[in-house]
Amino acid sequence: MLTPTFKRLFKTFKSLQNSKYGDIIIILVFSVIYSLVFNAIDFIRYPVKYGNTFVNTILLFILSIPLVFYFFLAASINKILFTIVTIVTTFLSSVLLYFIIVYKIRIYLLDTFILLLQTNPHEAKGVISFDLVLMVLSITIITVVFLYFYNKHYNNATYNRYKITFILFLSPMLFMLYFSRPVMPYAFFYAINMYNKYQTIINQPRTDISRLPSSFNEEKNKDLTVVFIIGEAARADHFSINGYPRKTSPHIEKLQVISLPNINSIYGVTNKVVPLMLTRATIENEDITFKETSFVSIFNKHGFTTAWISNQDLIDNSYSNIASFANEASIKKQIIWNKTDKKDFSVTHSNILDENMLPELDNLLTIDNRKLIILHCMGSHWEFHKHYPDTFKMFTPICTTSNVSRCKLDELVNNYDNSILYADYFISQVIKRLINKNAIVIYCSDHGEFLGEDGYYGHIPGIQRKEITNPAMFVWMSDEYKKKNPEKYNNLLRNKNKQLPNYVIFHSILDAASIHSEAADNSLSIFSKMSATHN
Image 1 (tube, rainbow, N blue to C red):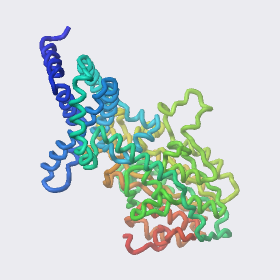
Image 2: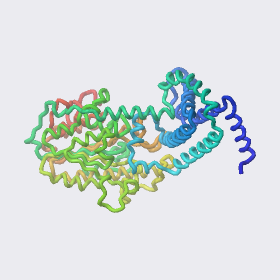
Image 3: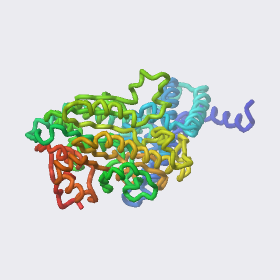
Image 4: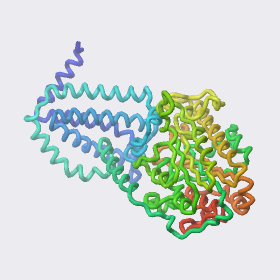
């Protein structure tokens, strides 16, 4: 039974809705509440940076409310449309609100939208928590209750002419305010529009840079093996080789790898960082990542067997800015999505271990030809404990909750450090297979990871701080390689402590293979005498 208070509330609601402008007032109140719940946090967290910051931020937020009002008012012209639009909008908004609160994302950033759309089932399970379900369920139930009472006394004919008048009146304001700052629910359309443009860009034909003049000393390097390991979310400052107090990199230290602790990935998201490593793009001409082929095409030109082994997302999907580069390789292998031969395997629930790439690497190493092998790791992606075996659970206790913000800091760091320890093991296993060959191994993580610093978690688009823009990078050379290329080893030692952008990898990997191309700039190679601007 309804309580007296609830009955009075319902009676007031009914009376208001039956008044001349009552229906419009109800939509306005709903829009204000929606704005306070879903948009206010973005204005609080990211105030405007001009004039009187506080006043201008409040003013811009107030001006955003008519936009929200316009959206729901237009939908309310039809009862069924309003019901569907309101439920879908509040459902999606509540999902995003959770990630806005926990991970401090911004929905209208392209990189954020790419993350949301391209997340695979394994990654999605890692962030679905009881808190998320509770928030979404609560907001959805409240919305359904509101719609039940609103629709009970809905009258199309009586009120639509007033609504249409308001809509026409607000249209010029909509045009003026829409581009001032995207707010939900418009942020969805804004992001979708950006994503569609992005899809068009990444799927355009690329210029083949292997057609540029280049040369290769086949006699000196006919048996060369180059392995490039793309790590995931591995911070330089959590490897003991770089001074971290915990012994997290014992294997590579014994193998005498050279660490480059001052690499700047520029960004904290894979889809932006990896293309910068693979192409000759720089921060000044970043659009090259969408327009040209990678160094893989140049290795192909000079007779290398090229292979891309991925333990991450599908490399054949056109929505990925990395897929086109993977498809340049003559051999492609997908690990985590190619388990049909294993009973009861589930990408969502199973551990995804980088060592599963090693059998493919072993097969490639039997090929009697010079080789470029790229290994794209799962690395230290959240959930960390899903990416290392229990035998690497050295630092305990660990946090395994899906809501990372509920983790105790020490438990989160323990979990992360175990994944770094496993990355160290994986790198060492790759190196041990090449010790007696003419070979070089280059490892570079795409970015780092927030571990609760100032309330930040994961790797967040739009944030550029050392925790996520200072990834680990290592180089190992076999004795035979050092004998053949002593100047490259000596130059590496001179350059290893320099502050360097991650896009030096394109130039460095070609230099490592003694491939000289007009596409490359040796002053940006860690194996050459670098420009004096790098220090």
